[in-house]
Image (tube, rainbow, N blue to C red; front, top):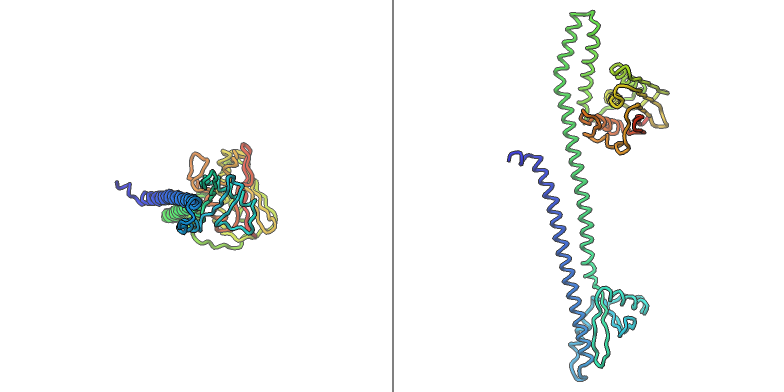
Length: 384
């Protein structure tokens, strides 16, 4: 029972309750409105039947009878459009409650046919075998009431769509807060052991100054501290500085080249002096992450090419590999949090890379090209 009332279950139950309530209200309103429309249609039919009876009575009653009541029944209708015809629907005798700029008999004949298709014409027996017919349509009130369920359904669907979008946005915002909190907490927890490791390396350097391995150890510990600093910056406002894009990219490239399999051929090329606004540590992390993904895609055997150039007011960095490639359906999905094609991993690397490039640096990152079995090219675009 305790798990049933957890904050996440309560939130889920609340969302379901809101949706079900909206559905119940929509369905109830639809049926109530339909019922009202049917009742009004039946009432209008009764009025027309009464009109027909009154007309028939007026035609057959004695001349000295009081006809005021019968005439009032006929003239009281001010809302229902009516066309009175002879034996044929094309024989137009009169009409009421129809707005026409001119008494075009063709329009009236067509309208009489349309009324007959909506409601069965009501017969008026005038005696001596003579008959007339009342063709009537729907009043404005009935028309509006008939359209109301359709309008309501459209409004409900728009509401449901809006509610879905809001719930998805809230869920994504919640996920973002969780990941940001996780990264900051990870950075915080790593801080103490990294500081201790740095202190120990200083002690070891003083005791064993000739040891060639200590500088490498110190470099890796410093690397850990840099990684922790990067995680601590996720979700915070970032300060950008004018930087040499070629130098920053080359630094990250060289770091990865020294730490991957020698079977992988790494090629770097850059043209011109490209100055962009960067947060260098975060951008280096993006480059390292893309190179690491390329290594995994090639299974430690292949070629990685990094090309940096300027195209107008845009700096372009292409990272290509000769790995397994991606199907087109995954071009965007690989940037979603939690999505991964690896057997191991959290699926966060490219999601964070996208945030760093697009939200912090106001650039773009996307899959430029990929072919199954031949490789993939990621492209980063930054404003110059």
